[in-house]
Amino acid sequence: MLTLSRRSALLFFNLIALTVIIHLVVDIFYTLLISSLNPTTGARITKADIPMPAENDRVSIEAYQTIMKRNIFGTYPAAMDENEIDIQALEPTSLKISLLGTVTGSPEGTYAVIEESEKKTQNLLRVGDSIENAKIEKILDGKVIIRVGDKDQVLTMEEVSPKDSGGIGPSKRARVIKLSIGELQESFENINRLLAQVRVRPHFRSGRAEGFLVSRIRPNSIFSRMGLQDGDVIYKINGKVISSPDDVFDFYKDLRSGSHASLGIIREGKIETLYYDFR
Image 1 (cartoon, rainbow, N blue to C red):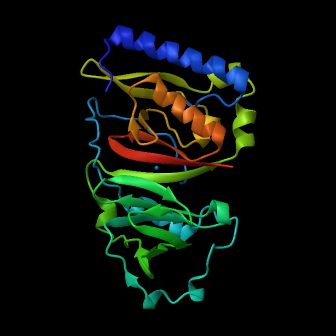
Image 2: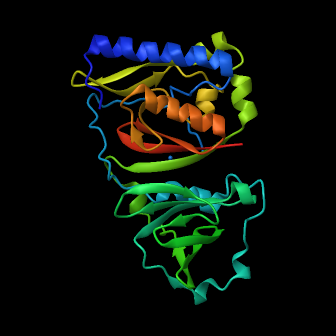
Image 3: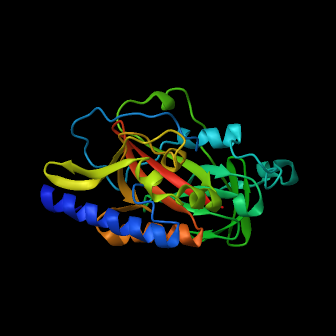
């Protein structure tokens, strides 16, 4: 966590923002400094003092249920038809991992979100990737076939019961948002217009700076399409609590390379993760 005084922290973050904006003009892509599937309407944090989330907070499974059932990104056919493989014949994996969600589409657009239970870390994995001592063989809607040793096993996403979806108190949700490189480039061509689309300032709690608070987000702006809402507090970048300018520029490098990136936010007292898939 940052330990700067309020005045020093404000100057510190303003300098970071100015540096990143200048970099934007040169490179177009600009680190989405003010930067978990279906962006929702604006919301505001109403709690005055939100405790920072613990690193081992668990993701709510229902956050991924929409991906599986509605196929929000269903531009392509499913990566693999369940009928082509006898799922029932496979034994459930005994590995300490959990399937949080799947996105199926073209080969490059198919992946699974898998959490390692002991490490409490989430991973975006494609066919051929490895986790624990298993290799991802196939990704289906709500299921992943993995190779453990010399046999295949199945990892299945947990079903959400009605009582699970109505929990009270802080929870952790995730969304997957697809953005095109062309869309980012077009949005960042006009620096004056970009600066008018959002307001960013350091977020303080108990006199300490903890992330960024975003507000005054214009409808249909790039920030809105990124799934951000007024009142969101950005406290993590790529799974790491923001603690230095290096964290911001790591996110910038991910954008340039076209790889996945993520932002951890606090929205209305609840923790969410926004995953970005750049095309």
